[in-house]
Length: 165
Image 1 (cartoon, rainbow, N blue to C red):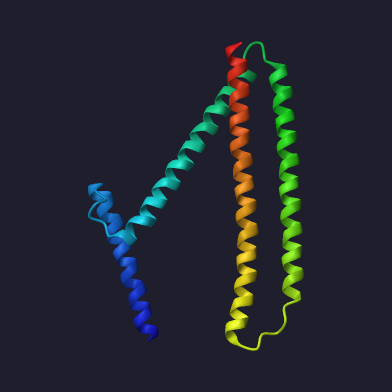
Image 2 (tube, one colour; image 1 turned 30 degrees about the vertical axis):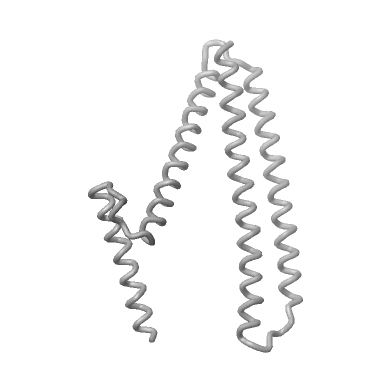
């Protein structure tokens, strides 16, 4: 049975690899099987979003450097930039503190778990722990990305307003 599962996994992996190769060659997604299409589209969307975020960050850094290194540097911009960084660090500390508190609660709950009588109950308890950890990690990651996006918007707006003046 183990051998059959290994062969099935290898066949699925091979199908995904072939579907990706076909997409790279033709660019036509209509011929791809539905299960193979979802991971490929997801990876493409992720790549696109990360590319836009990196481009925005580069443009903001370029504008900040242009404003700071001009013959008449804008010291007000520097002060506002420092204030934004302080606010970001405060938000980061809040997110970290909240995550640590939730981890402590999860750990306390894990130590209080009764011994399971059956393997299925043990698996349920373990899954609850893993899913709780995953939820904390997802929440922390989302908060960090939201903070990054907020900073990009704030810096972009700040620099755009200063460069117009």
